[in-house]
Length: 379
Image 1: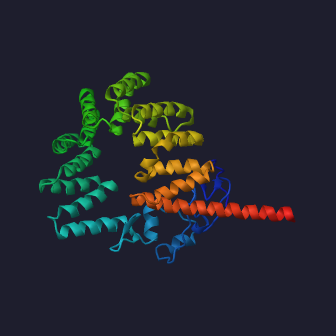
Image 2 (image 1 turned 90 degrees about the vertical axis):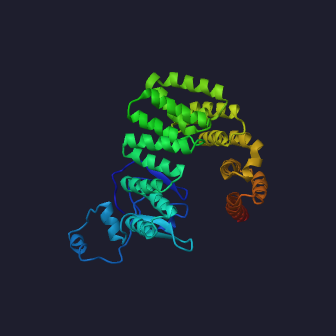
Image 3 (image 1 turned 60 degrees about the vertical axis):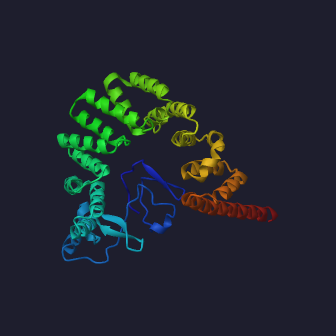
């Protein structure tokens, strides 16, 4: 056992509440439902090289994350990829990027190879190299998506004039995509041009009234300029004009994660459902908020009329299943899973199979407990 600093933060795994005060060394297999978020990982080193041995002889040694990955045999942080047969494998990030670079250089005119490389560069925040690769893709006849990603790479480096021109080019090519305009609003925010900032966030909404990110951005813009109450009032006014749930979905997101403001989030989520009763995201938000409050009956009442959607959307199916299962309405759970097993969606089918196993395990445990209780009474 090793003492800790007595921190109060904890995490839940395998049904356990784990918090500070002491430490237990255990294998990963002890946590079949996931390793606790506050766990410390101990990994034996199979080989100690000549560089590490003198350090260990001095006692406990602090290493940087880069040194840790090197000791574990990775060139950079370990990332998961798939081999040529689709099996997951771990590889060092530097080796991954070097391999993708070499793959592209072998056929520099293959834009798809360049795109795959650029996506990984963006994912791991290698912005300068991503910009270089995407610039070549755009120069060789890239699509609007290529222009967009190039503009994002430039914006992330605060190359504002370049990003402005690139993102305008992306918007011209992607006339039905609101994302370039939203990023242009961010460009003008950094340029401190409020009029242009608002113009382009509104253009994003005009292109797609259901673009939740744009409504969230507009709320933050208005809040910073006029204050929270005025911002909410204007968003609600626009929501009534546009007849869209998206503004309310955006608003609830700012209040959903705090117990003190969750009722406020529920009120906005309800307005979203009232505005667009069949909006999937609105239903998901409101049902999740009810679930956070522990109001399972409210989740069931909300989602029961939408059972037909569950064969196509695993997220709604999951929220409904959890509410039924946690309230121990096993008959309804069984009926739901039987219906979902015939769904056209592979994801939904897999969900039904996995949850059916969970229910079967639960019923088996119930039977075992009942048999044990019966035996005790007889004894």
